[in-house]
Image (cartoon, rainbow, N blue to C red; front, side, top):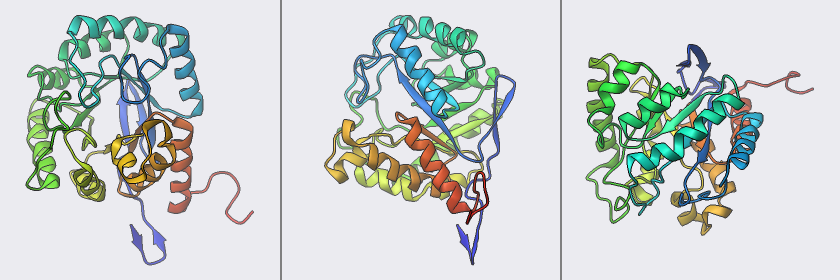
Length: 296
C-alpha cells in the first residue's frame, strides 16, 4: 500500500519453521512444483524418471526456490482419485532420493491424506500442502496439530473430479473467509502452528470467483497468517488471454505480481526463475534494492 511517497511493507509475516530452521517470508518466497503424476494439467509426465526429477529439482533450487512441493496425485479439474497405496508408491521413493541428493532440502508434500502426510514427514518432508483444508480426511487436522509442521490450509468447493462443473457461491470471498475461520479455529484449539492460507484459485471457482479472490488477498492477510498464491499457468489466465497452460508463462508472471501486491508471502509455481524475477521487481517497487544503491 502507498502512504504519501512512502512504500510500506505489503506483508508482515516473517517466517515459517521448517525442520528446526526459520524460513523468512519477507521478501516473499517461491515454492517450486514437482508433480510425480502422468496427468497433471501442465507438466504431467514431463519428469518420468528419477534422473529427470532430480535434475528439475536441482534447477528449481538453483533458481531460488525455497520449498519444493512434491505431489503424487493429480488434483486438476476432472482428475480421478487414486488409492492411498498408489500415492505412497509414487511419492516415497522419490522423496527419499531428493532428501538424500539435496541435504537440507525443504520439501512440502502435496496430499490431503493424513497417513500419506505422516509417512512423508517421517521420510524427511517438512511441510504439508492440503488442497482440501482438512475436509477430505477427518484425521488430517488432528495429525497436523500434533505434528507441529507448517500446513497450507486451502479452500476448495467440491472434489477435483467435478469441482469445475458450474461452481456456485453467494459471495465467494465471504465463504472462503468463513471456511478459513472455521478450520483455523479447530487447528489452533488443537495446538497447530505455522498455518499458511491458500484461497484455492481454480479449485471450484470460475473466472469471476478467481479474480474476486485475487482482489481480496489483502482481506485474507488480515487474518494474521501468511497467504500463498497458486495461480501458475491456470485457466484464470488462459481464459483472459486465450493462451494454453504451455503458453501462459507471461500471464502467470503478471498475476504473480498482482498477488504479491495483494500481500502474498509465497508463490507456488512451475517456473521458478521468472517468479523470482517478479519478486525482485516487487522488492524494488517497495524500495528494497539489491547491491549498489539506486541510481548507480
